[in-house]
Image 1: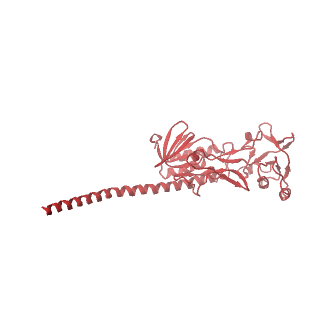
Image 2: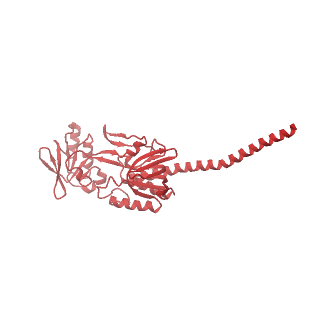
Length: 345
């Protein structure tokens, strides 16, 4: 199908691992699929994808390139652009891109991901995905046995420090204005050999395009090779909000860590015909999990379309019989009337 036709079985909004995985499965199910990709993958700053069986160490851009080629090989269409509006119709959805182009879809799969909102510390954003990290399962091996700092921005800081201690025995926790920890927390940190530095963190030290340490407000620099920070995970939900789906706050340890769009285990939302997959629905999902979620949603979308196709086929099959039955009844009534008139004469 070409975009000229302007109507697809499924429009996938978001061309990351979840979106491409869903598009691949739906195309293999012989559905017409259009993927609209905004071109802002969350893991673009990272050099490699990890914990993806069979794709360990693949650069993110390469993984997406391979995924696009696989989906296109089965007939999926992939276009670049931002979706600015999605509108519910009586028989599907109307999707508008920023360039004004419009397509329609019977179903929507939204895989727009999330935005990592970082604390306002000088130099932090520039090193994000390089030496500034947040997930030990994604990056812990790469900084194993190095000097790692933990920037405390929430009550989860002690948990982070203890977790990263699995990859290195040189961990320092920067309290960065967070409330003082309790005696039990200090005991746990001390037992694992984790130091605690008081005071506000003013910025990052960089030399020869390499992070070298954490600079405190007073000017003191603590040498470090990597810095861990917990961002706020905010779902890219603007299109979904336009359909009436509001983000839900996620709390961990009594602290709000971000927002997501609520859905059932297969990604179905409260708006019939709209599914979500990947980080927009699950803030903690890694790449391989996002791909799996896209596949699961795609299979449910196809089944939903099968049910609709079957219902329409049944209605279409019944329609001729209904018309024939009506014709026979009409003829019988008219025949009875003619017979009655003849007897009256």
